[in-house]
Amino acid sequence: MALSETRFISGPAPKLDLVYSDVWLPGIYSRRILSFELPDNSSHERTLDCLQRALQSLVNGTPELGGLVVALPVNDEANKEDVPWKAIKPYKGIEFRIKDLNNEIPSYKELESKGFPVAAFKDDLLVPVPIMYQPEPNAEMIVQASLIEGGLLLTVCLCHSLTDGNGMNAIMIALAEQCKLAAQVEGALEPRAMKMDRKVMVELTGSKKELSDHPAYGRLEGAFKPNIGTEEAPAQEENGTKDPLKDSVIMEDEPEKQAAAAPASPPAEVHTYRISTANASALKEIASTQGRVSTHDAIAALMWRTLTVSRYKAGRLSVDKTSTYTFPHNSRRHVGLPKDWVGNCCYFVSASLPVSQILEPDSLPVMAAAIRAGLNAVNKEVVGGIMELRKPCSYDITWWPLFEVNEPWILMMTSLYHSELFGVDFGDSLGKVKHFGTSDEGVMGGIRSVGLVGAKVDGGGCDVSLGLDGEEEAFVNKDEVWGKFVQEVGK
Image (cartoon, rainbow, N blue to C red; front, side, top):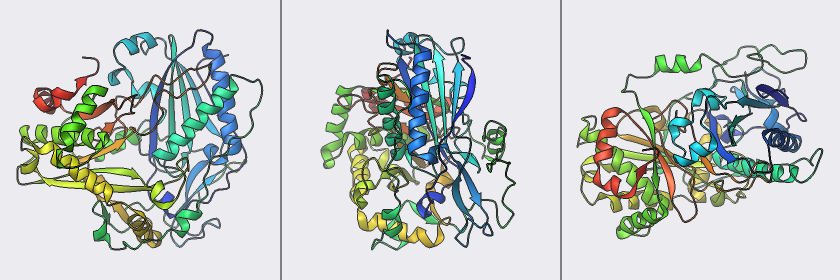
């Protein structure tokens, strides 16, 4: 068996119709890397066999995972809307890449001994989607198994048109369960169907229908409208599927195009820091003096404060500015969707404070309280209200900080803290997830300024990632409040 190849794992034709909450985002990929130490009784060959059979059961039960996300012009017979829409069409299947990286990536033992430093997880080697944003058409699911000495790194990339990161967590947990089953039996597994019914989203209503009720949202006509207009649909191959770039749908020149179009800014590197369980508990206690907050609130507040202070000291942020922290919040429970529902149901939350207040020595509890207040304001009426605003103009309602992501007064964050993937058992062939994170390009793949709260380990500790240039890094490393709670991984 070749150890450097691409396989396509095909299933039935996709049936799901995407709705307004699915189509508005451009072709964004969620990108995750899971680290495994091979059990003594396993091998790379056995692991790949179990992974392939598990993926086959997923695509057989959830055919959309093997589909191709396309943008349909208004005159396409499959488009029932009066604007360009998106659909998941038949394709070759889940793209499953296998790479032997024994000579390029450190051994599992070396990665573990150094605390899994983010610099070792090279994006160009480990992530089959070279940058987070890719214009349609997009393969819905691309998986890469990277073989290293004593272990395996599993990269999963999912196009956001089908699901947000929370639905991705559900898919990855289902993959773990199927891998576990594959290690126990031979042959094909039963199809594994995910929960994807869009009825709740289609019928969702809410009373908060003024844009002013939603601080993290803005309106910009056609902001995310697919660039297809009324052109004819792309030509199809004989098998009915579009093959945009031979065996891959990834546009290889997209990173260069986006880099050329991006505003000039100091080069940043992603740095990962570890917060122990004990320090996470101590941080929460300090952050709770203004009111009850969660450990995650406290960690986020510490990151917000530290970045704001470092940018101020670096001369990039004036004291008269307002700083905004913003992040996506899983809203399933607010609208009655099950935890393992696969789809898009996030509400963007923001908290804003004057830079002058953040610079105060005792600002941490105030910042944590602001974050908690933003979260406490989210309910069914709020989520339903923004969804009602989006329904008639899906591409116009924006997450406004996305357009200012590289500005020093914006801190965009995403989180894997509640993903429940750390330690998940993939069965006898792979074992448990020993580390779960992202590459050296950061969670947003090329937008390094976006911060990440990593997966929670037992007790509440986690890794966090910040994109810092050299000057910012120097101020962060000298920050006494930051240094009290964190330690840089690999240093």
